[in-house]
Image (tube, rainbow, N blue to C red; front, side):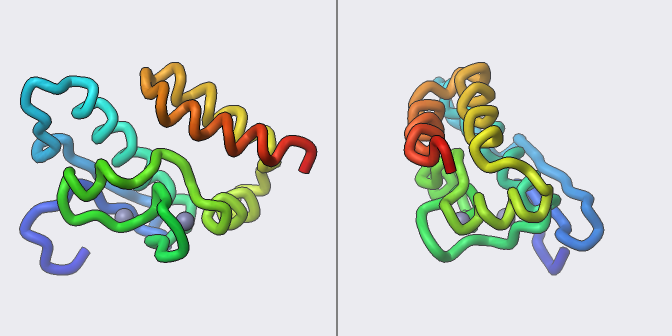
Length: 127
Ligand SMILES: [Zn+2]
Ligand SMILES: [Zn+2]
């Protein structure tokens, strides 16, 4: 885990364990922003548990972030490269996963992120 004095989250690719803390995700007076920060942090760490490293290919859920403000800039969904890796790692059907992600983001109260997920699902329909 290195010499981090604190962490927002951490996930081990090899050990399949992770932690996250919402203590430093403060978004004063903006509970929707706090909820998005907490949920996308959990999704990001789950990506690490599923063997995804930090992404440097595109804007992606798996982009590294050092601050909550930086994390706000990353999407709640995976880029095409990480999506392909995850589906291969977990032996998942990409199309079914795309639709499940969109539904989950809607249910989580993240409508903008859900719309982005539906665009991916629609664009990849039939693949
Ligand atoms: Zn990370
Ligand atoms: Zn990526």
